[in-house]
Length: 225
Image (cartoon, rainbow, N blue to C red):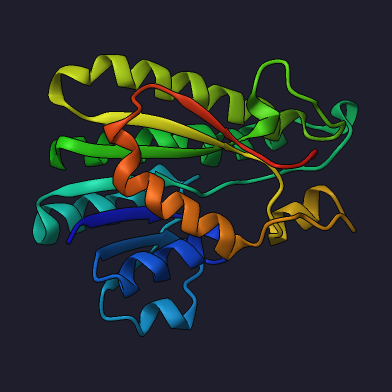
């Protein structure tokens, strides 16, 4: 059984993924600002209330890893922040808020976990089709989509920097999944996949994908958006 860190577990894919790993017997460190009761009640899940936009909050993760786990087998960077505004109305503060979660939070959480990652560990970053160069883009998502492009490049770089340690870094660029965040970005649109559907895919990829990929970006999308 493995030790898995998952961010953004209060709802959607992250919530379903945390329960899936835990119910299969793995140990889960669930990181989110809000903690659902179902996660608190699961004996295989440790919940930490952490705001990834606040670097000082991440000390809770560092303290837990040093005192309790000692090793991390996988990280799923699933947390995300979104602002839906015309670019002309999107402020520097809007960009900063999105990037603090979607980019800086990924970098900081990875750096904290590095001492506990061993050969065979897998770091999976959940990006978006909106961050893929050449993909269809949608007005109002300048901060969100550009941040999702940034973490793709970050993951590619880290895969090269840590390949000698045997740590794999991959990205899943997701298309539309029926989550609360999708409803914020595309009101009224119905996605072909549920959060549970995608959690099943991410679960398998987290455990097995590093046998086949490192430094790769997989486009996981069956629709537009």
